[in-house]
Image (cartoon, rainbow, N blue to C red):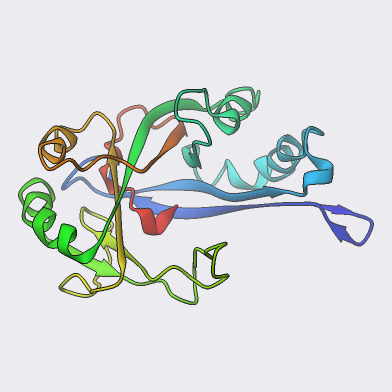
Length: 211
C-alpha cells in the first residue's frame, strides 16, 4: 500500500497445497503472511484495506486461508488474530497456538529420536540468505536451521550442525511437550494460528521455515 510514493504497508498471500491430515490429498489454501505496517501508520486499519482490496481476486481461487502471528506476550490475546477475526468478508478464527523450541546441536541430537518417534523422518534446513533472523547484538544473521518433519517438510541436512540454533514448532497441546518437559526443554516463544474455513485441518504441516 502506498501513501504517495511511500510504501507504508505490505502483505503477502501464497497459494499453497497442504493436506488436511496425514496421508490425505493436499488442497489449495491461502497462506497470509509477511504483514508489515510502518510505525507511523499503525492504527489506521491499513491491513483491513489491503485484504479488502485483494479479496475479490483471491477468494475465487480458494475459500480457505490461514495465517500465523508471533505472540509478543503469550499471556495476552494476539492483536493480529483479533484484527483478522473482525474482517467481515472472511472472518478468521483461532485454530491453535504453536510452541516454538530452539536448541543447540547437542540438545537437538538428544531430541531428534523423540521427534522421529512422533513425526517420522527429520532433517535440518538452512534458509541463510533467504529468510534470516538478524541479531541486534551483532547485526549478523543467526546461524539457524529449521527442523523439517511432517507432510510439508523439505529435505535438509541429515544431522544437527554445531554452533547452529535448531528450531521447530508444534501445537502447544501436543503430547510431545510433556516428553520434552522431562528433559527441561520448553518453548522459547509461541505463535497464534488463525484460519478461515479450515476447521478440520491438522496443523502439523506448519514448520518454523514457514513463519
